[in-house]
Amino acid sequence: MKKSINLWAFPYPEKMSLRQCLQLAKDAGFDGIELNYDLDSDLSPSAGTKEFQQIRSMADEIGIAISGLCSFLFWPYPLTSNDMAERERGMELAGKMTQAAHDLGTRNLLVVPGAVHMPWREDHDPTPNDVCDRRARAAIAKLLPQAEKLDVSLNIENIFFNGFLMSPMEMVEFVDSFGSEHVKVHFDTGNIMEYQFPEHWIPILDQRIQNVHLKEYTKKGTDHSLESFRPLLDGTTNWPAVLEAFSDVGYDGYLTFEYFHPWQHFPEALIYQTSDSLDRMLGRK
Image (cartoon, rainbow, N blue to C red; front, side, top):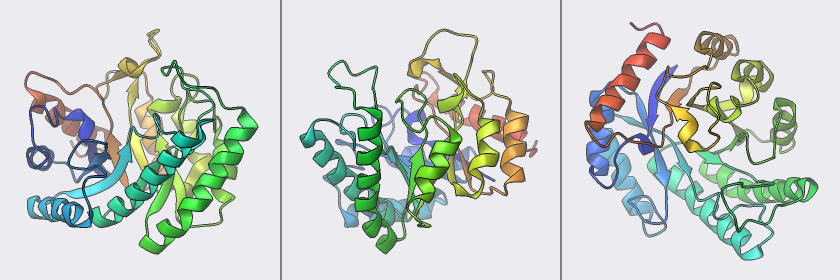
């Protein structure tokens, strides 16, 4: 298994450029870095194939792989929204992300296929479960031809608080229903830790797991927001059991640490600390 880290762990773009982030990840010993598609950054709709290929070349020059592409944009523009304009914008952005992943040289695109509820969005009108499921399947089916043509994997992510795909069996049925090697699973340990256990999901998802987020979570707290996620090893995740489960299903891809609170003072400390923690988890130290 390979070490990766998400760009959200870096003070980008406020204090560091994209090149500085890539270089720091490389210097800290990561094999790859996961980038994030947004509306206003180096990775946004204002960039095109030329700009994304330049980022890919920069990563190649530094010597670090781009392990995947993900985005927060599935929340303001959910593919299953009751607001048709939000759905259409979400589909437009998802198509642009698919092209961007290809241009960046990664096969991995994280896709949130739908949401029954978004508790942090006061303006969100909840989508009935059956309607959410129907719209999500239609959205992925519409995105799939482009993904297959570009050889990009639409990796479906599990989210504990959005009310959709809440069990590994549901995830298996959803992914398998497309009958395509370009619809897989982006498995996130932290997203199910509040109520379930990642080591129980992994054997059921098995070879469907295409990419992985390691998010540390503690069941000792009462916070259910993004603030509940912790630096790696500062939580209650049973990492030996999780890593053994990955090994048992033959997963040898990226383990990407995802964290949303870059350290404002000495930000490199978090990056090096995470790399060291991953080395110890993987038996490299």
